View 1 (cartoon, helix red, strand yellow):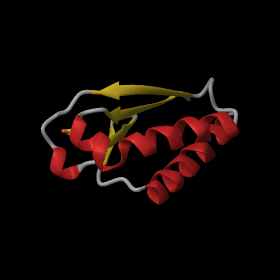
View 2 (cartoon, protein in one colour):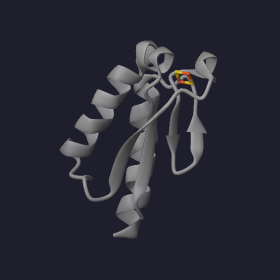
View 3 (spheres, rainbow, N blue to C red):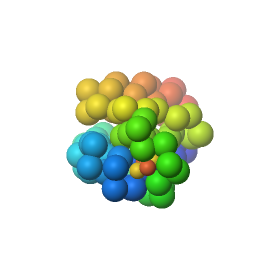
Length: 85
Ligand code: FES
């Protein structure tokens, strides 16, 4: 199963935390050797900035994502990836 993580790169989401979230996601993927399983893509602003920082994973929308939350989200997806192997 491939996981696609769409990170909103609009200026509001970026300033509200997605700059750090993106760095964290990249680091997590590297440390856990998930390069083949996870694809990161940038998304444009969808005018839902008040929900930012926004991240979408395989079509599921996550809003106001903090770094603690992104860690938990990634851990839960990593379990799914590992089950799949
Ligand atoms: S900047 Fe992310 S929705 Fe506008």
